[in-house]
Length: 294
Image (cartoon, rainbow, N blue to C red; front, side, top):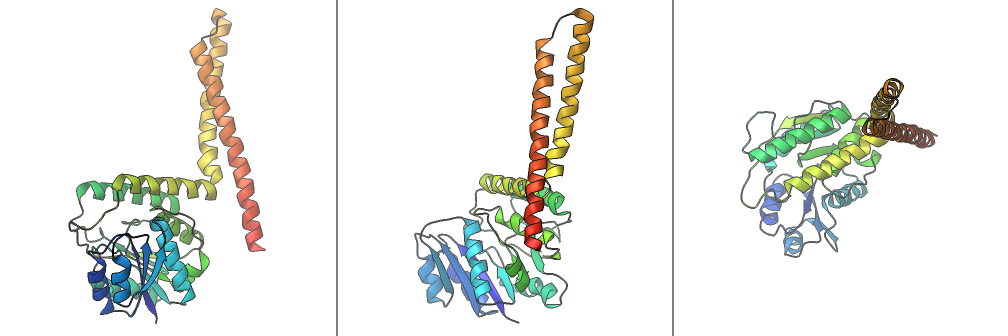
């Protein structure tokens, strides 16, 4: 079975050589996406025999992953393993990562940093990852422990059947949401992470924001009635309640309490906008899905 390693990299000259040398002991096919590096990342990777895809400028983690997916599809690889360039992943974990796919037990395997409850991840990152994983689980109805892990294995048909759009860190969540829609099986295996001074260069705040926005975007598109419709009903109920309160006060005291009236009118308008959005988006999504199935 043909296994390819895909490594997104940006200014990783300090780590990329060690990573590729370690991986070469296990696999022959290594793709490095040099995402606009200004150092020697590309030259080092090419010198060690990796296939290098170069972006002229830094386009983001999501664009690097998309380039790797496209190259792996062209090469008709059976399993693609995404592997970080910063030296935090261990090549020894690849065997356990690919085994569920080889055994036909899953289409996607995530290397989880939390399955063994043993991780030296900084506490602020640990909290952030767990929050983002919780949000992702709510969207895809899974019980994952580490939705943001960059160490993953993908079966060939995953690459062939999902179309990716996100340019940033949110692509990890996009892949899971779209794979869930395709009913691909997702499992996790425990991995160990090596945190050092040259690892984990992603800004945790921008990472978290990107993932949250991505999750909200795809959830709202796939489940518009739930995402917009339920808040719409709540706002309409609150608006009607305040409006009735306004009318009651007027009937008893022949005066209008401006603040209460404005809250009632405002929430009714907001509820109506959300309800119309839910109906329109649901209709649009239904038409698109029907066209895809014909």
